[in-house]
Length: 66
Image 1 (cartoon, rainbow, N blue to C red):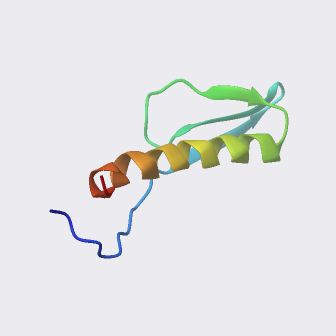
Image 2: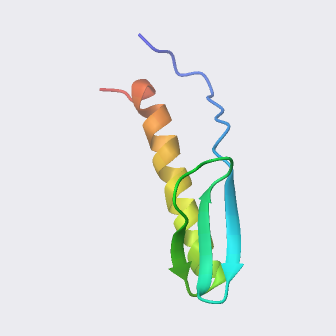
Image 3: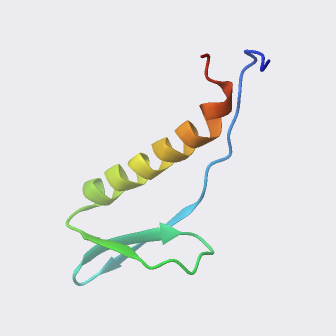
């Protein structure tokens, strides 16, 4: 049984790049393709937030009560 202690997660780092065609991002130190283009800083930040949310949910899944 997994207890209900506070959990702390170090999340992935991302790199954001501005190009003439828009904003792009990818995980830092990754050979993944750049994702984008996004029209504004707000748009790319929202996409990063969604990626980080997925990571938190994935890591916290073993602790969910069933």
